[in-house]
Length: 277
Image 1 (tube, rainbow, N blue to C red):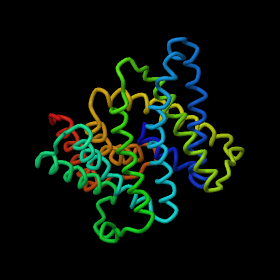
Image 2: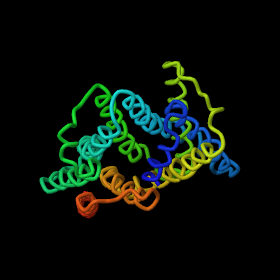
Image 3: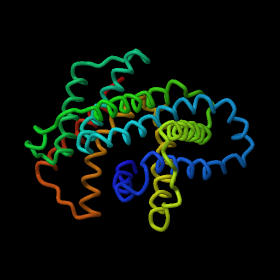
Image 4: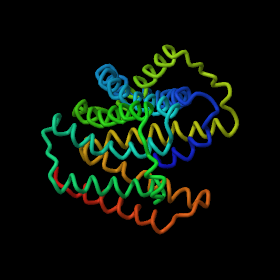
């Protein structure tokens, strides 16, 4: 679902400010998810969950804000490359938050996974890879990526036994929405939601329901069971899944070199997931 969101988001690109689109999808998700409060037990859990969920939501929103601001001065290729650092950053943060260690074998597997993912990102084009260079936008996205790593950390840190996952997801979305709305006010970004109509509205609706509510629900469930390090290891599969989806949906060819990168990413991710924490 996260991989499909890249393809759907591409259809919305340039319509209105990207932060505004993300806020719109968050607001729709909040409205839909508010139906859970029909149940009394969910209403009772909201007060004890809201602040913790909002902290998670702020880091989640900061990632999107960082990504969209970065894309004003850098390329999708650069952000996709830096995106591969998130699992390793998460693993490093786990040392400080959960006293987990990174063995030499794990570190090597992280590098191999990054290598496989970068092959997919650069479509196995060596000249394209050699032309890669960092700029100010990349620094912004790197900070956003660190926020994404903290998001996964705090999913686990702030989880409490007895939490209702849907209430936590609602709190995360509400806190993230507030953070994005305040950012837009500070940066003087207009909403312009009236431009989102017809097929564009259905694209945003898909992002709100599948790529926001459902994925946050699965993230929250997974963080408690797998831990932050293993949860973020799955990110290595995103470019590979996007490549496969692009092949079936848009007929974008997959070369043998890119296929090799997909296989490397897949096996490296499996090894990371099978490692004991």
